[in-house]
Amino acid sequence: MSKQKSYTFMIIPEDEQKSWSFILNKVSLQFVCLLMIALILSSILILFIYFPKISHYANIEADYKKLISERLQVFELSKELKRIKQMDQFIRNTLGEKLDLDNKILIEDSTLLFFELPEKRISHLKNIPSHPPISGYVSKHLSNTDNFLKDTHHGIDIVAKDSDPIMAAAKGVVVFSGWNYEYGNMIILYHGDGYFTHYGHNRKNLKHQLDIVEKGEIIALVGSTGISSGPHLHFEVWREFKPVDPLLYFPEYLHSDLTFQHDQ
Picture 1 (cartoon, rainbow, N blue to C red):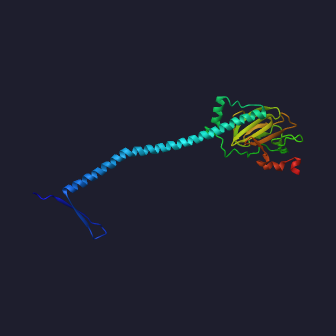
Picture 2 (cartoon, rainbow, N blue to C red):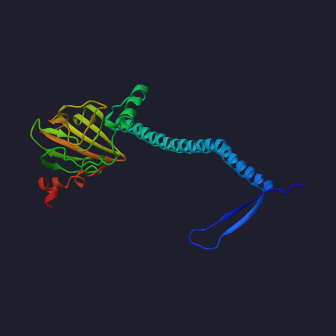
């Protein structure tokens, strides 16, 4: 019977004098080689089977995040649409006019104006009224009292020259541009985040409903239309459908206040 071949393997570290050696016979060496080949094939098989699944999982996770983002956008859109419908009711109640938001095309157009066109999107960072609509002198203050001694006055009156330009107090969309019995030619802007500004007694409105205007853009000319004793701008600021004193946003008008209230 012939002697079975054997193989000696030595491991000699570079930085050490001691070495290791081990002996494998032919059968053991074949077994080790087959084991290594099996491990390599198994690794390749795992990569082919599970790597697409890992990639698919990553795609599912990305789609999930995208879905969550889109649902948040839809939620914001629904909130804004509800606000616009409230705005429609507000216009109906205060001016006896309507925006005709029941018209499907108008709703789609106004939604696009607010949300889908980047160049026309209204940023909530720019919605706070901050640009004085006109240079002039305050002749009447806001008064919310509903008693018989003093009429309700939801804004301030600013005396100015006839046909002086009136500018938008912030970026927004024109939700009303037309005639009102009390304020004559009037423009109402919606700035997002519940902010509205009203501009009344205009000689001429230069913007139309659903026009997008930039902060400081000329929207009308000073006049004396409606119930008015002379050229001036009736200016209001509303937040969440409640009137706010414009002087809180434009304290510079305090330096040009002609009213008795300022002298007190």
